[in-house]
Length: 145
Image (tube, rainbow, N blue to C red; front, top):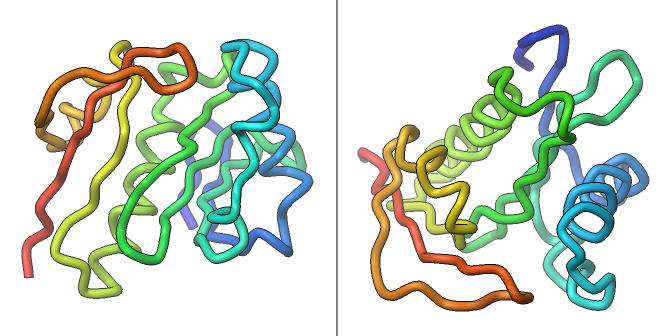
């Protein structure tokens, strides 16, 4: 657990925290970015481990780690951006991947978020591609054994 900007990040399962996770993702991806709701919820939510940042009881950021080491659905509510909360969520997910002995983590970064991930050590690879109408690029972080 990490306290940052008065937000606390914890690792949670989907079943235990689905309402809070969905609230953040709905606001960021569906309402703010216009991603169709049918694309937001998928079969990977339940088997993934989720990092959830809360300010008091209010959810403010989230991200997930899929079983094979893919990080995704990183979302931070607008008032919390630039305050270190997204980095804390990412750091929790990377630490969990290391604890699981995974050799690397991979993610699909929106073009505008690439500097954020690069600052955490992720390297871009391959060409840019479209995902739900938003330019993305694959980024990878090799984890030390």
